[in-house]
Structure formats: C-alpha cells, structure tokens
Length: 116
Image 1 (cartoon, rainbow, N blue to C red):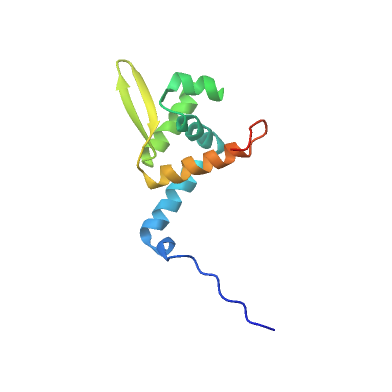
Image 2 (cartoon, helix red, strand yellow):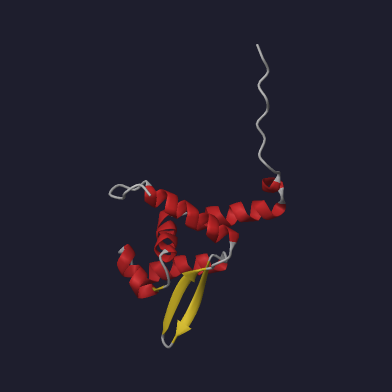
C-alpha cells in the first residue's frame, strides 16, 4: 500500500489566538437561529429595529436583545437618527465578512432561489 500524502492547510493561521477569537465571534453571532436571521437581513443593508422586527416576525424587544448581543460582539454597529436607531453590519470586520459569505452561500442553496 502506498502512503498517502498528508493534506495540510495552506497556513497555520487558524492556530493563532486571533483565529480562536474570530471563530468564537462567528459562532456566537450565528447562534441562536434568530441571530443569524438578523445578520442575514442586515447583509442586505441598514435597517431599523422596527423594520427588522417586521421582517423577522419577532417582537421589537426580542430583536433589540439580539442586536445588543451582536453589537457587543462587534458584528453590528448602530447609527442614531433622531429617535430611531439604524443597524448595519460592521463593514471591514473579518468575522462579519465570514458571516456575510456564509449567508450568501446559504441563500444560493435556499429553496426558491436560482443558482448564482
């Protein structure tokens, strides 16, 4: 029997403390499923809590709790405008980029969507 060559990742970046933090933020951002829905909605652009609550068919307090957690994780930022607060994904954050790519990949495989 011939020995198979070992398959190695292209680099060991995933072994660094920064990678561990990145993985933790991504996993916390994706759990529970409602939080993933909030992130998916924000992947399309900025939204207020009211719009998010309507889109997700959840109460505003429930959506606000998820947004507060996502803000604490550094995945979402808020822009005040009068009495309203508009939320958006943090544009250049590595965890957000990973989540956005995951959301887009999931959307491509969702029922009722064309392959892109």
